[in-house]
Image 1 (cartoon, one colour):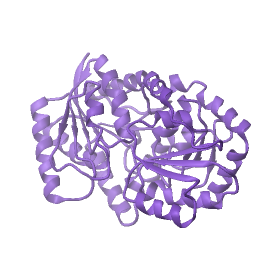
Image 2 (cartoon, one colour):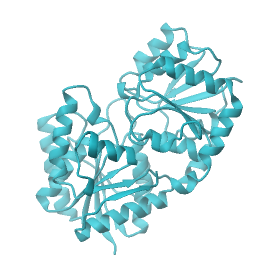
Image 3 (cartoon, helix red, strand yellow):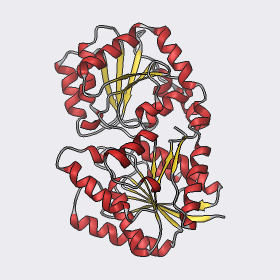
Length: 384
């Protein structure tokens, strides 16, 4: 039975949540679940992906005041606008993405009597003290307003339920990430030229502390093998990372060309994807790499070990350890046969496991259950 869903997201920067919505919107519409996407503003250094989402048929509505960080006046204005939007569109389900939209959106849904689904994407529960304590307390309160919580991997569910205690197990659903596999492969056909004959390694993301781009640069300085590293993206720490590259004399090894609209061509050109994060949910860069048959060197944090099997289709190192990361870089730079073996294993079954169709079908099933008023636990490894 078709229904109406109103999606609320803090911002449509070029990250995982945007790419998940790009996969979800057409697939859910095909299943009869349609409705607008309410989005806040991106930060100054971030490109806005609203047009990308609108090109897929989404009706994107900007929300005044909705943005990262605490601003009581702006937050109050955003809350009023969300209330008005829910009353206007009268959805069957409100689906929130990211922390700020999750807080304001679930409150507005409760006030208007609409069931709310929230997807946990990121890192705010592991912010520096005391923000982490406040975030956990807020999420525990919001859990009482949440009909269903979507976790991206089983480990993320375990952390949310058991480690942080911010959501009841009975409300959780494990739905792994999905993407338009054919669109990714088409985009990958325009791969840029490699800068040299050396192996090309790729890092892509926001230049922020939780992604630890500085630690990766320090690892490159400690490494003993020859390779090139491209670091794509924008963020408040990009300038500092570039200064560090210069200070360590790595300009001929590490390049930071800035943000790109589509990472797929770079994935196709690279020999290895590198993830240096201190915390993650289920990074889509790793998922995209697997679909394109590229191995990944990752820090074993959050839901990443659910996506990458150590020594099978990728390689794990501990987080916040440039020395261990350097060892991983050296190992994979030196062994082309190992990289190729890991890449072949990564591609096996990835197109089905991470398809947009699977993501939309499982999300629609959650909406249907929430609309019926059902509460059940999804403990299986759906899509992950």
